[in-house]
Length: 259
Image (cartoon, rainbow, N blue to C red; front, side, top):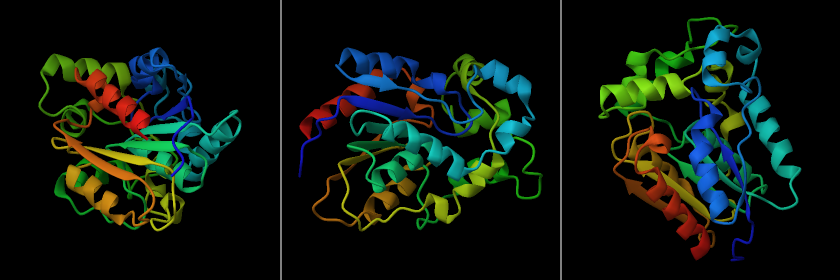
């Protein structure tokens, strides 16, 4: 297996949150010698407050999962080397798709939405995500998570003031078309295909993407000669903004260097 030589990282944001959630991570990895990019999704190139003020946002509502995948494909293919892709939640799914297409030198999927073929049945996943899909509502309007929902989905177990600050700093409207795309072939990967090193990270306290679901995704990858690693930590879905974020980023750096 060829070692990871890339010194470029593309961070891929998940659903419901601003790409600003990666700011401290990007700075940390820059100090580790990496060039970092934190591109927002299409129609999300603004701060969280501005995006909330646009809700319901017709331009964002029109964005589909294939649009987001094409957006990141264009970015990674424009770089001078294959990047390492690090994605959280829905961004973790997109990162796996980039890896599966051969566009990445390595992939870290943090608390990632499962690719097509791994059917989520975990109760907390269903409780966290079914409403956002809005099957009986118009896809021409965006979905904005309530603070009460945020408390359960992202920041369970944290003090109220931390939950509130996280909500106003990062929460944004979301396209139902993108979310529903996670149930289609646009979200498919070939689990038997050879791939560059992949690290799947799960959180034992995560309601949105339960650790059990992440472990089932890990077990689906079947190419014996490809590096596929799994680690579970005591984290909720707000992993990027927890006080433990630097320890998690350090673990990723060490994993990259080990390969």
